[in-house]
Length: 391
Ligand SMILES: Cc1cc2nc3c(=O)[nH]c(=O)nc-3n(C[C@H](O)[C@H](O)[C@H](O)COP(=O)(O)O)c2cc1C
Ligand code: SF4
Image (cartoon, rainbow, N blue to C red; front, top):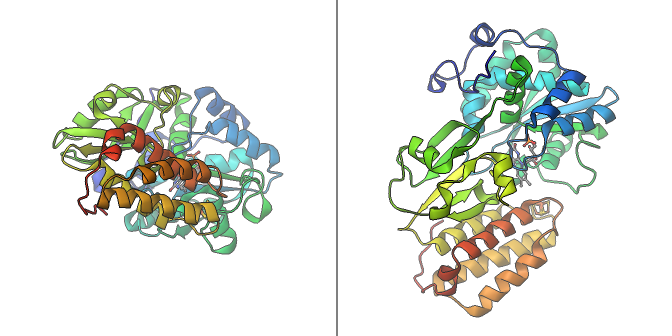
């Protein structure tokens, strides 16, 4: 059987695919277990929530420390502001995700599955809960939906565990990683919903799906979610999204924890997590954002830094105060023009903030800022005062 695609089947804009249609199209759910874990290791599938960790290796580790009481969390928080792919998948292909979650539960010997869904993703919540109602009694006893607050850090794996355990979606210190000590102290597998959907197809076909869900955002004519073959040149994906609506200056690859790439260098980049990793880049959560030449990159970056600073969970000083200071310095440059002292402070404070939080939120923000200062070096060095705000 050739590898089907996640969004094959009925038009996703029709909404949720019902269970009968899903089973008629793809066949019954195969069994999870050790063989599937080894198949996932073999296919090299990597997580689609941002960090790109190898899925099979994570399942192996959780299975080894499960003792029959592991927990699976299907992460559908999708807190990244420009990302839409998890929502689209939860809304249109809920049974693929539930299949993947059930396979994970069987493979890591889990006694509960939490479907962790952003509370603002209303259509996704509705579709997932209708799909859950269509599953067997056993599956409905195992799986439950937990709405996640609409905050950027609520999707961090330790925050998902914290919400399930204590009702608070803020990250906690790692180690221990959730896979060693998660919900109620049990080994916990946190896996992005797209990743789980890929598993549901791989388990049926025995081969890697070879596709990637991306959200094309910013200055394109038809922004939205696309499923592309891994390796598709980024420029082709932009054409599939209707093409650039105005000349592009740069591309933000991977969302707010991603990196800026000058437009001239971006079009030939392969949309493939491993190939990008080899070039020191990351597909992150699959957002590809085009910045047009008509917008000021410094103002854009300052706006995003203010957002990221405001999303700190305020538990760690370097993250709470450091991100705020970085956002303020960016904003001063954007509003009042370049001050060499602020440029130096941005570099120094970035080094001081990186790696100093309980979670990776400050690291993501700092990497984003440093890539902006590299890609838009001249703009940061010679920014005029224009008191314009973009966010
Ligand atoms: C601040 C922060 C926010 C995150 N938000 C999400 C999210 O919304 N959805 C998601 O799947 N992963 C998110 N992650 C990544 C998760 O911690 C975790 O790596 C992921 O859910 C694991 O699934 P995967 O291996 O399938 O990607 C976030 C991480 C950080 C540090
Ligand atoms: S690093 Fe920031 S977001 Fe992460 S737990 Fe600490 S304060 Fe919260």
